[in-house]
Image (cartoon, rainbow, N blue to C red; front, side, top):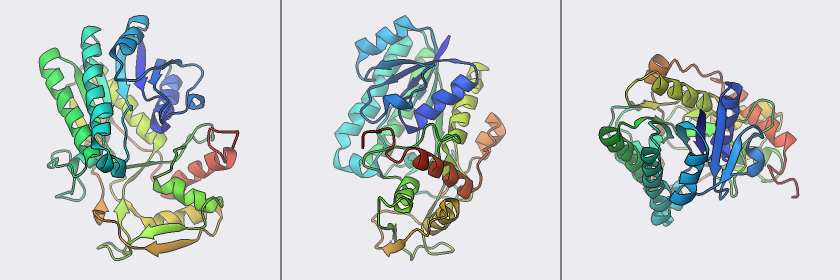
Length: 331
């Protein structure tokens, strides 16, 4: 029996594939390579270039492979893009989930771990955010993910498809050996943008706003190492395999780090005096977004290995130094 990783050529998905293989499991990867990289997929995994919305092609994968469970990373995730192109997000993310659940139902696959997002909460009513807090998304990305969670809940009620949704904010870092890492085009995530400044691809890093209601004036966010995140998905699979009910868990550092702290940590991790400038606030950026991960730690037994942001950034820098052009060696 195999675990199917949707979006397994992407940043988080490729690390999930490695962790599954290290756990001794057979892995099947489905990715349309719109955002992912074929070179990121471990050679031991079976790979199919298939779009999740293509029901015929996806069904063929289920027919060829003995799929026991699904881990879902195949969603678009850029908030500003979702605001500009909402239908793109509802098509790929939400409609894609409809197709997936139909195929799972037809092939009697009853377990799915879903890479969700803390963006489903919208503007938080409590800090840190708990799983029981209201979910009121403020952008199409968060809305699409919340709709996907609701679809799985109804599929559980009707077809007994059990699911776990993992909600988190920011992912960072890379495989410690530097073999795979983060490579987006264009890059929108803070840590790789900071490292572009460290490597000379940017002149400086712009920190948006220094007048937030936080200890140092810069907004605060959660950061989870990508391997710790993959391990949480692995634990969620075990949770479902042990016959537990569907559930949702937050994943986070519980404390959070400011943008300024991230830049300072990157200076230490890289040994480069990274130039940083303060820019104007971006509209809609809350002061603090931090998730309470107590439930994941207690119920799943999740114990992150990377609690120090400097260590997280050091693994990302190792990837950048070994792969200055990412997966594209021709640049």
